[in-house]
Length: 430
Ligand code: UD1
Image 1 (cartoon, rainbow, N blue to C red):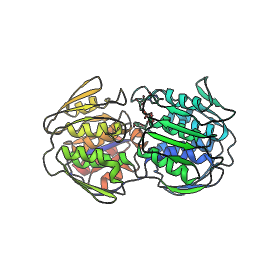
Image 2: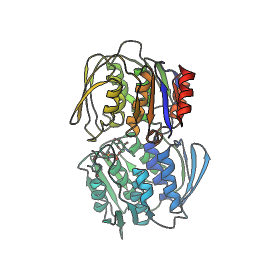
Image 3: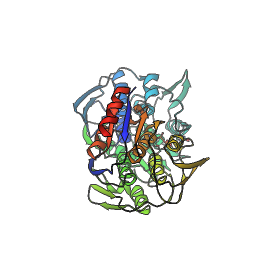
Image 4: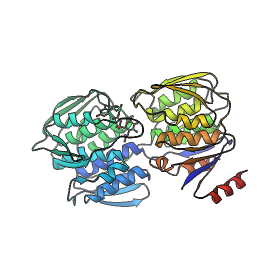
């Protein structure tokens, strides 16, 4: 089974290019089926989630051509059915954006119901509430979400919880509705803004994305466009914390520093230097790191997708830190693995109480999900000795060439398949 082998101890030093935002790409790829004209999307990360979504789109007739590794040409004119099978949804939850996109364009969709996820319960009641408000009939039948509408009519929708996914699905369903839609208490994440910018470049009329009130005036038709996806805030943040935890000096390039402010400010609090320029951020960890407290919140708060990475860093910082997870209820599953590496962490409900230790030691551990997996890799990079990480398929869902980018920063990390390859790695790096 494929795993990462890591020999920790090297500070990460150098520059790393950040790719396109996975979560923006998922929304924008799904949105691209809403026009019959050709759409070219640039800066699409080559990761499992985006690739599976494109397979799901191809399964209903969408033509997709990869012009180069990060540029895709999409034509949805040949769509011949609106049924997204369970296999795709099982692999990638965000295929449910096709509910909003198909319902908005074809006024019907049949998409397998996403199941539970390993970071906690993930209800879709707000998606359904929004669709119904737009006049879409939504039924759950045989494990499928079935939508049908005679007409989609603009509406005023107040979201009971701030949900990225529901905001996106409602925007998709409303963009070609009759009349105006207002989404109140909308998510403000950068990828919500990126989706709005993409749709507007196709002729939509969406205002207010990035605030908590999004106003959409329905248009009859969308046209083709060429659009580049924003850089990935979470990939950038992961490398920034990797610099901190390994006492390194890393510049993340091709980023939007504004999107990284909540991350930069925590790094400053724990004793790193952070230098921003137009499209890069440099993190230098020259001094011993100190404790802080953090609570995950919707944007512009500290992202839940960065919670494991900051916890791994705080567990090596002097003093007691408190990490509160306020978005998902089961996002501390990596803590047991980290304890096996020597961390001192106690989880009570949605809070982790972390007493900093001076060193991790390498261990054989398993990635429990995407972001926690990445966080465990950076723990391994800081640990003394060898760490192996299983289930790296989770990490590959959202990080392109993760180990190769880390190698360029001086990390000793390789993908190995067999015990023999692992032994070779041990000998080579020992
Ligand atoms: C998206 C991101 C994910 C990130 C999360 C929070 C994508 C593909 N995924 O996930 O990486 O961790 O935002 O920033 O962009 N909720 C409800 N009812 C709903 C929908 C959500 O109660 O109908 C709750 C959830 O249980 C959770 C909170 O709202 O507690 C936020 O979830 P949401 O923003 O919807 O997350 P996702 O869109 O699934």
